[in-house]
Amino acid sequence: MDPHTSPNGLRLVNKPAGSGTRGRVLRVSGRHQVVDVEGVPWQCLVRGRLKEGAKQTNSPVIVGDWVLVESTGPQTGVITQIMPRRTLFSRGASGRRRYEQVIAVNIDRLFVVVAIHEPEVHTGFIDRSIVMALKGGMEPVVCINKCDLAGHGELDQLVQIYSRLGYAVHRTSALTGQGIPELRVALQERASAFVGQSGVGKSSLINRIDQRLRLRTQPLMTQHDRGRHTTAVAQLYQVESGGYLIDTPGIKELQLHGIELQELASYFVEMAPLLGCCRFRDCMHRQEPGCAIDAAVAAGRISSARYASYIRMLDDL
Ligand SMILES: Nc1nc2c(ncn2[C@@H]2O[C@H](COP(=O)(O)OP(=O)(O)OP(=O)(O)O)[C@@H](O)[C@H]2O)c(=O)[nH]1
Ligand SMILES: [Mg+2]
Ligand SMILES: [Zn+2]
Image (cartoon, rainbow, N blue to C red; front, side):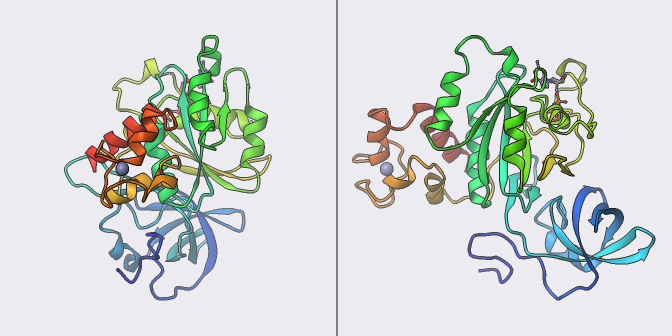
């Protein structure tokens, strides 16, 4: 095992001890980082040495990181050390070179935000996000936004899939304010992040949660090219009613990263208790004879939508 990898797979990025004042990374854009140092935003650069280990990922420093900063002037500094990460949310970056794109770190709850319409919900996106949240040590939470657009009874099935699994499911509308008080409570005393496809209303929800924050939002129609998103970089905010919250740019697809074939089923809570009950020890639960998971799907104890998600993820790994 790599000496800088902890047993749960989180990389420990602090090599030799650095020096300076403790701070938390609020935002990373290009080579520049904004770090909260005792309530004051500092403009920082990253010490060259810290970039060495980061070739396999998008950036050595990620929003949410706890760091040590040495002052180089008024409210400016250099990041000398990155503290070990408690949790990490990442995906496989699309494109020719497959690398890990780390989206946010040191968060307790990952809110997977979807819209009931505009854009349509893809449960596969929720399922992938849940897998990566669990892999990275976070509690996944589902947030179904734009409930004002939902027809009568339309939400029930979706809510049921995830609440049956034991996940908290929020029904919200950034337009009417539905579900916002409950979201504020869920954010208190924790660090959370909102992730989801572009246009689902992540930034709009944050504006509702804390009226002081005036994040840019934009209707889907005015986005020229469909790959574009309104929020360009992830940013960490302190919420007035309590808690820390990271807004992230919309992601179109969530490619899994760093998950072994054999490991995947263990991130499906409804499958985990059945592991070891199949006839074959190396069963991949693709309808092999004597598969306990297959039997549970046939009996309706595992949702067929979730099982289909599992198979699709398996095919992509
Ligand atoms: N009807 C309705 N529209 C909403 C709701 N929430 C957001 N919108 C609209 O959806 C559009 C996209 O909202 P944003 O908050 O910019 O979406 P986002 O998820 O932050 O998008 P990216 O930053 O691109 O990832 C805007 O036009 C919002 O006004 C809602 O609850 N109901
Ligand atoms: Mg946004
Ligand atoms: Zn099996």
